[in-house]
Image (cartoon, rainbow, N blue to C red; front, side, top):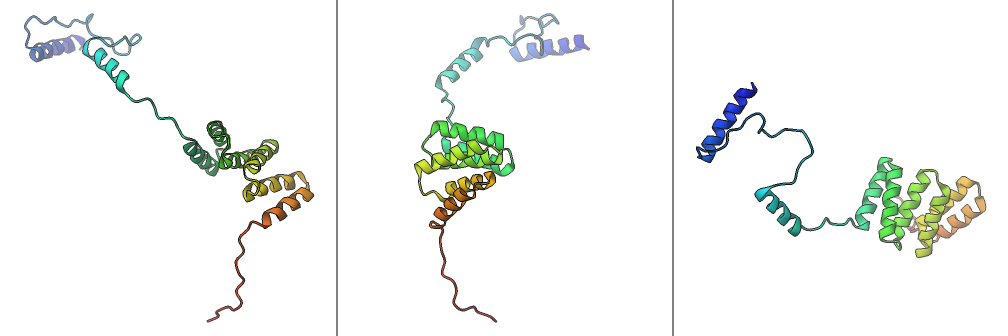
Length: 174
């Protein structure tokens, strides 16, 4: 079967090149498929590869917003460790992001790491002292720890920031 393949390859090489003096392909001259390490490109392909590498744009860096979107998706899907790593990367890019600190706090709370969650919520409150979700996160940690006084204080502080709607005075009953 291999001799037949060599004969077909020789016939195709002669027809395509149009040269009668083209070297015949023998089994020793056939390129090995899957054997050995790939070598550098030769000829025109090498030139094109070098030109492409010179003109191609560098890879776009991922923004902190994209990292936070991915971390939120991980949180919703239950992949908390991966989400926490993405939130850490977002905080490395943008350390003054309240949203990144808040999301990191949520992820650490889901991972049952109350110290890291409390640190993240406090960092969010340092950037925005009246952030209601950060206060609720700290209140939840205090409640789980059994510190009812701090929980009540944070819940009362947070209650001043909720929207209140007027109570209806009359109901329409059909």
